[in-house]
View 1 (cartoon, rainbow, N blue to C red):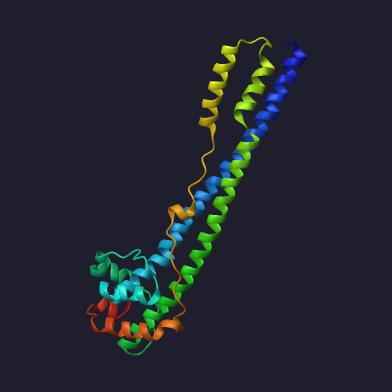
View 2: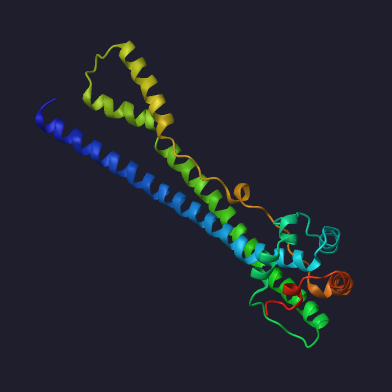
Length: 239
């Protein structure tokens, strides 16, 4: 290979490498950002959904009433339900500290607190569901992006082409077979891993029904829960 051919070969190799690794880097950046969005969604689940769910669990106090709440609202999964949370005075004080208080009597404050949390939780679940829907669609788009990239950038073909730029035309059959085997292993090693989908990592939670559709039955449930409350830090709601 003379100097001109060698220079042309280097230019072609550089162009192929720049294009391949440029697009690959874009996809890898998209995947890293997607993973970070999933972590943010989990924090959203904990901070906006989890804490309010636990507050409702504590107000209902007994697991039998909590499961009746599930039945009335269709909230199927006992997510964030831990019997320890119902018994820990420290957790109760921390979760109810600073909660807005409405009503003149203890009974009224208890009812207002429960339904204020319910409405806030309803909005948080709608926001979380929208986040999940967006992340599922973005994850599918990244998977499709990877499939297109790998289809258009067949590493075995690319390596074979680059090798032909450097090799003699009469290279042996055995050499070609060994090179093809090496290319296959290299391609597998370089394959871009698709990110884990949000619907695999994060729970899909049902929405709460509009309060007007179940408030009557929930009021009866809250009355029963109020009758068994004996924790001052809950009765005074953060005072």
